[in-house]
Length: 265
Image 1 (spheres, helix red, strand yellow):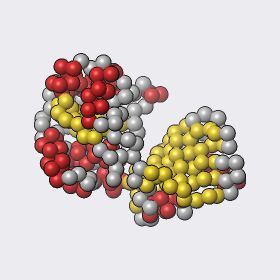
Image 2 (spheres, helix red, strand yellow):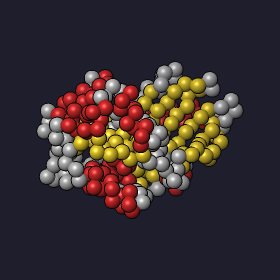
Image 3 (tube, one colour):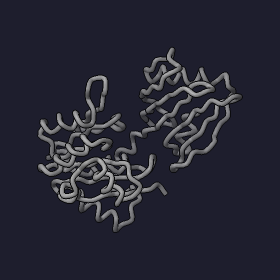
Image 4 (cartoon, helix red, strand yellow):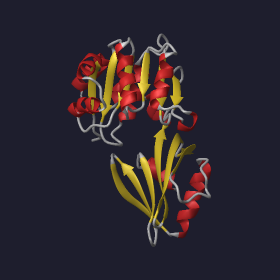
C-alpha cells in the first residue's frame, strides 16, 4: 500500500518516522515532503523489521544506523529501493529512496532543460576530455542527469566506467563499480583502479573529499571525460568548492568544461 501510493504520487523517497503515538509516513514529491499516512505505533517496529529483512540488514540491531537495498515491483514498475535506518527516541526511523529503473533510459530531451541550456550541455558532452560537474540540492535530479548523459554517449566505441555509492541504475554495455568501504573500495581508490582499465569516460557518483577531487581533476587532464556531482548551491559555488578541496586554480580552469546547477521545478 505504501509503495503503491508512492509510485502513484511519483515520490522519490518514503519517510517512516515513529512518534509517541503513531508512525508518520511522508512522501518526498518534487523535493518537498508531504504527510501521507498515519499508522498505529504498533505497526512501526513490524514494518521497519520487514523492510530490514528485505534489505538484508540486521533486524536485531535497533541502536545503530544501517543501510541496505532491495528490488521490488509496484504498480507494474520495477525499482530498486535504497534503505537507511537510524535510532530515534521513539524507535527506529527509516528512509527509502525509490530508484525507478525506467528513469535510467531518459533521453536528454526529457530532462526538462530549456532548449538553449540543453544545446549548450550537449556541446559540452562532445568535448573528448575534461570535467563536467552537476550541483544542486538532494532530490534535484543530479544522478538522473548524469545517467542520461552517459546513456547518450557512444558506449559501443568507448569504455565507460562508473564508480558509485550505491549503483542506482544498471546499464548494459557500461561497466559499473560500487563503493564498498568494507572491501576498501572508496571513491578515491575506485577511481585509481578505473584509470588502469583504459577508460574513455568516467562517471564518479560524487566528489566528497580532496583526494577524490585531485584524482578526478588529473583524470580529466590526461585524456578522459569525467562526469560527477558535487555539493554546492550554484554554479559559481562549484568552483569555490573545488578550491576548498585543495585543487589549484590553474588546474580547475584547465580541467573544467562546464557546470550544471539544477533545481527541481
